[in-house]
Length: 255
Ligand SMILES: NC(=O)c1ccc[n+]([C@@H]2O[C@H](COP(=O)([O-])OP(=O)(O)OC[C@H]3O[C@@H](n4cnc5c(N)ncnc54)[C@H](OP(=O)(O)O)[C@@H]3O)[C@@H](O)[C@H]2O)c1
Image (cartoon, rainbow, N blue to C red):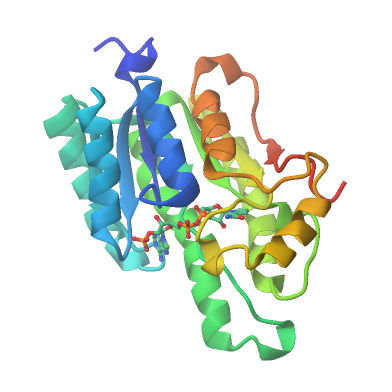
């Protein structure tokens, strides 16, 4: 199989059914990349994104994944291998985008151990073990992109655990880059700023949105495509010497 052009590449995007992940999936497909996307609790959104790609001449499959359920990762990997075989006649894929995540809206004093564990499981532990599980199937010269957050760099009240875990994910990015360099697999993190999705219940009323926008050099909140277009553009050999980096896509937030 010819794997030198984008037409033969495949990306797996976790949380590709809504928001930023959906935009990554759609924009990767527009570049000719085959897409495996995941949803967790809302299959209809996963199916809608896959249908949109398939109806527009691309190829996509939606699978269920709960990033917090590490026990399901073996079975998930088997499903991935199965769709790779049946849909693409391949046993590997090229790009993994660890995008799925959940938000926090609690001050430190109100954060329970249960909330803490859920945030860790989805936003950090799941990223580590899913990547570990899928790495044998990522091609040499492939790429992993971990979606971080501006909150890994600056602090706001109410997101302490979330922000710290995104910072940890950026650390992990460098370690994966180090350990998998022998397979020429590049690992980078992309840190969105304030992006107007449904994440954590959205960005609030007009007043709050203005307040956020005032802290952004470009003077507006981001939209999912601001991140999706950029991540899709990274999924190429054009970025072949970019490795172990944190790239913020936030319009110049909190500078
Ligand atoms: N929006 C922002 O301002 C912003 C800023 C910085 C960083 N980020 C990061 O960007 C990523 C995507 O955020 P978004 O704004 O696109 O969020 P979103 O609109 O809320 O979408 C979240 C996606 O993740 C999936 N998901 C939720 N819980 C999951 C779980 N336990 N296991 C697997 N998948 C799960 C959802 O699937 P279901 O709908 O099926 O549950 C959905 O596809 C996250 O990592 C987030 O931390 C977002």
